[in-house]
Length: 112
Image (tube, rainbow, N blue to C red; front, side, top):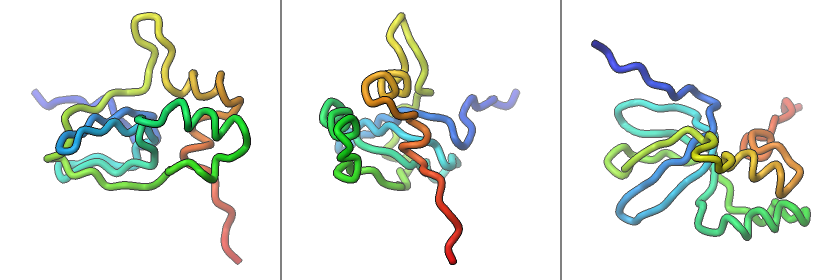
């Protein structure tokens, strides 16, 4: 029986990496046997990220598009509420006033 994947492009996810250990939060761009494409940020400075976005200094946040090779991936989770704790997206919205998806993947205007 084939495995049904609950992950779709555009989903907000947390990826746990090994060697070195990192946690990345972002919008899933793609997923295949080679790895994961994600637009997001490292969760280590989470409180600093929230503060920078809240004070209008979001250009100081190390946000980027990355390819994470599958051999580094330990786990990937959907960003969803768990055991009464809100999702990171809800926390982001409550603490910054901005929608997480719009922050992570801003719409781009067509080039002239």
